[in-house]
Length: 252
Length: 200
Image 1 (cartoon, helix red, strand yellow):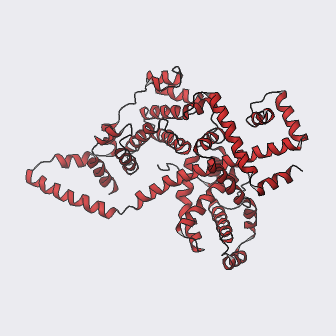
Image 2 (image 1 turned 90 degrees about the vertical axis):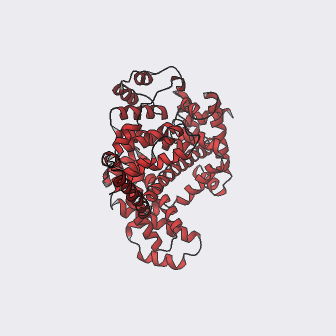
Image 3 (image 1 turned 60 degrees about the horizontal axis):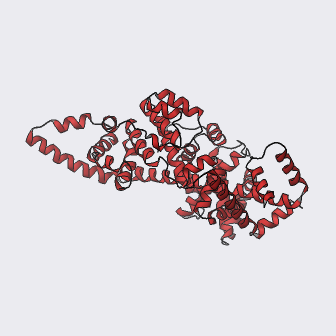
C-alpha cells in the first residue's frame, strides 16, 4: 500500500531527490513494481485519451451549432421579417414618422453592444483567498495590469475571465473571445460551471462588439431560455426584435 | 464561436504541438476538413452518423500523432486526414464483419503512404478500450483524474472546481480513483497479457 502510494507520487513527480531515483531503480529491478508502474502509465494514457476525446467532442458540438446557424433556412426568417417590414413601412407611411427608418439606418451590432455592455463588478468574496494582484488591478480598473498579472499567474477560469474582461475594456475583442471560450471549454470538459455564466454572457457581448450578431444570438437565446442563468434577467430585458433586425440588416 | 485566423498546415501543426488555443485549432480542422472527409467516407458506405464518428476519431488520432511528434509533413493535412479516416472506417467495417468486399477494393486501391498511417493508428482499438474504461469510472472519478492528468491542474485548483473540502481530500480521492482505473485495466485480459510480456 505504502509502496504503491510512493509509486503514484513518483508518477505525479512529487517525489524529490533520492526518493525518485530509488523508485526508478526499483522499477528497473523488480518485475512486480515494473508491472504496477506500467499499469499506472497506461491509466494516465487512458485518462489523457479520454480527455482529448471530450475536448474534441465539445468543439464538434460548437461546430455543429455553427453549421445549424449557417444552414438555417434564411428564407423563412427573411420572409417573416420582410412581411413585418412591409407592415412597419405601411404604418410609417400612415403616421408619417421617420423614427423607425432612422432606427433601421443606425442600428448595428456595435450600437447594441454600446447599449448592453456594462463593466463586470468583481465580487471579492468569489475569490479563493485574499485578493491577489490580478483582483487588485481589476478593482483599480488598471486593465493593462490585469493582463500583465494574467501572464504571470497560474491560469484558471477566473484569471481567464478577468483577462477577457480587461481585453473588452481595452477593446481587444478577439483576445476577449479567446479567454471566454477557454472558460466555456474548460467547464464543458470538466463538467463544472466556474465563471461559466459570466463567460457566456460576455462572449455574446464581445461578438456584438465585433458586429457578429449571428454568433451572439444563439448564446443570448440560450441564456434567455435558462431561468437559472446569472444573466437571465439582463438578457430577457434585451430587445430581441432589435437583435433580429440587426441580423437581417447585416445578412443583406 | 468562430475562427478569426486561418492556419497554414505548418501553423496548424505548431498550434497542436504547443497546445496553444487547441480548441481553435480543432474548430479550424472541423471547419476546413469535416465535410469533405465525411463525404469521402460516405462514398465508401458510411452513414452520416458513422462519418461523424469516424471524423471525430480521425481528429483525435491526428492530434495524438502530432503531439507525439510522429507527424511527418510528407502530405498535406487534408490528404493525411482523409487517409486516416479511410483507415479508421475500413477497420470499423472489418470489425463489423461485413467488410470483405469493400476491404478487397480498398486493399487494391491504397497506396504506399497509407501503410505508414495504418501503422500509426494500429493501436486505435486499444485506445478506444482504454477510454471506455475511464468512462466506466463514473463522473466524480473521471472529473478529478482528468483535471489532474489532462488539464494539469494542481490540487489547490481542483478544490476550486469540485466540491471537496481541501487538498488532502482531493489527493485521497484521486489516489482511490487511480486505483479503480488500474483495477479495471488489470481486469482486461488482453491488456494484462501485453503488460506481462512487456515486463518479462
